[in-house]
Image 1: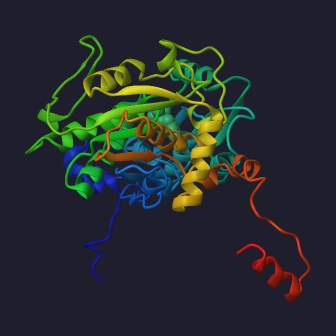
Image 2: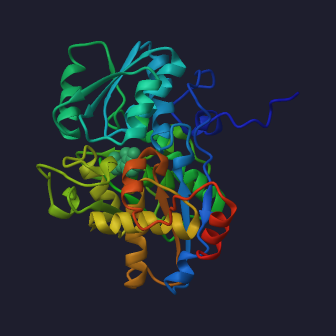
Length: 379
Ligand SMILES: *Cc1c(COP(=O)(O)O)cnc(C)c1O
C-alpha cells in the first residue's frame, strides 16, 4: 500500500519554508493540519453578520499549539547532537517537550510552578517520562532559572526564545491562508509569553509572499531596529491579542510582578517576546485588550455549549475578546475573523467541572420510570 498521501507533520509538509535540509530527520507526531471550524451559532446569537472561524489547536497530538514549535525545536536539537532539552512551562510546553523528547529518545527536564498547572498537563509530562521539577515560584522564575542553568549543564532550551519554536509555530498561518484562500481580516488570540502572536505574524507575512524562498524571504524580528524584516504590506490580518486581567503586562505597559489568573497557560508577567508582539500589533494596526477571569470562563462555556468546541480557559480569551469587540463594533460587520483556540479543554477538567455547578446532572436509581421522568422533565 502506498504511503504517498499520508500526512506526516508540519516539518515534512513545509520543509522548503523551514530551516531544515532535505535530509533532516523530522521528530514528529504528525502535528499541525488542525481543523478550521466555522462557528454556526455564536454569530447568530450575538446578532452580528460576521464569519468567525476557530483554529482548533487543541487537536494537536499533545493537545495544544506548542506541538508546532516543539517538532521544530526538537528536530533541530537532535540534528545538532543534543541529548537533553529543558523548558520552563505553565504546562503545555512541558507536555509537548516531554512527548517530543520521548519520540526522539532524549531526556526532557521541565520546570513548572508547583500547584499552578492544570492536572491533565501534569499527567502528560509524567507519562511521557520527563523529569519534572516543581518550583516554588511562577513561570517567570522558571524562565530565568532555565536561562541560567543552560550555561552550566548540557541542555537545549526549548522555550520560545529558541528561534526554531517560532519557525514551527508560524505554520499555523500557512494553514489558515491555505484553507480560506486568503488571510482573514482579523486574527484574535490569547497572549502569554507572546511568542505565538509573533509567529502568526511571521507566518502570515511569509504565506502571502509569492515565490517564497527561506533564505531570502523568511521574516525575523530585528531587535535593534525594532522592526520585522522582509515584510510585504498586502493582505495580512489585523492582529488582536487578549490577556487575562491579572496577567496583562501589555495593558500595564511592562512586567507584572505577581501574575494571577484561572487561565494558567497565560499566567505570565514578563513575556519573553514583549517587543516582538508590540511590533506585531503596531504594524498590523491591531490592539491588545484584557478579560477578567469571569469573562474568560463565560467564553469557554459559551464555545462548548453553543458550538461543541471545548477549549481550555486561556484559549477562550480569544473568542471572548473577539465577541466583545464585535458587539462593540470595534471589529466591523462583514469581517472574516479567525480565533486561535490554543489548547484542549480536557487539559483542565477541574476548572471546567467547577464552573458547571448549574449543569443538569441527576442521580437516580437504575430504574425505567426514573430515567423516563428525567428525560420528560428536561426536554
Ligand atoms: C502557551 C499558551 C498560550 C500563550 O502563548 P504565548 O506564545 O505564550 O503567548 C495560550 N494558550 C495556551 C493553551 C498555551 O498553551
